[in-house]
Image (cartoon, helix red, strand yellow):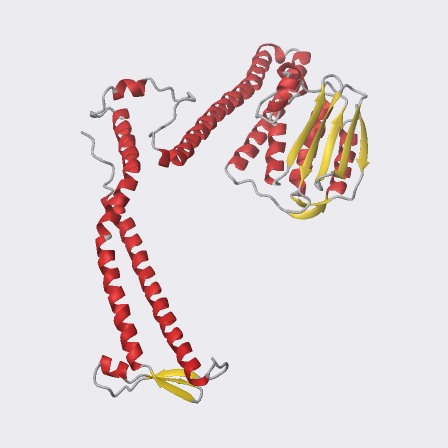
Length: 419
């Protein structure tokens, strides 16, 4: 038979003790305030009786005869001095102290009586949590094949699909509704992360399998005919080099995302001109891609706080995507501006094939490609926009994407001008 995971008695005792200590401190503060209020009221009445008013900026003090024999004797010698006047306060002080002692005795009795209800109330509050922990322990023991006293626990566990969205906990206690929602939300996020990780590993394996197969095929061809056929030799070397470059690019992108997920991808934050950065990207694009017409529109002198190399990489990714899916000779426009919301923005607009409406929610997913065959031809890995999104997210920015089929796509990166 399973034991309880933990005895709630010690926790209940701590909760009850803390509450009782707080209550006792509250009594002490209350008694002090009552004592002070009583004496101040007597002093005000005495000053009014002697001087006709309560004077300001005068010396006030209470003196007791330290040579008196005993506490009460010292209290009886009390004299209240206020300015040039004085009044005996011993009798009043004795009565006030006796009154406060009586109140204190009543408070102590009430405090002692309330100790036991406070303990049992704490145990009652902890009972649902203890029940949840006990049930979790039973489930864990059952999962390890140990005998439990829960009916049909083995069949119940066997019927649970770890990937099912119905795998939630419920105690039926309204006070624990928030805790249940938090735990169920955690289970959902763990499930989504598991699915995402599985899909990522599967896609990465698939992406690496294809170039490896191509390289192996050409290596076999070289082994059979490449030594004597110069044409096959050249073709094989070119293909192996192309696929090796693609694999190297894919591995670098995977490492970038892995470092980003682990929080090991550093950012060198500084103030820089976003407008100048877009000008540099525009010049680079014109040099490396003569097949397209590149236009530049700088509407504002935009300065942001961020990692210039990372954001430049984002702009290059957007330009690279635009070039891949835009017919030769068509126009690609780069812009930098401040939008109506006061955000610093740069965007890349092409006149290419556009993005299908059904694919729009997934374009930043890792390894997602709306047209895998076309992406294979253009050398895409499906990771570029994922990397761009990671970079923009770390800069607390966001994307705005507008696309129409066979008309073109405009992707705008919006960043806070001040971090």
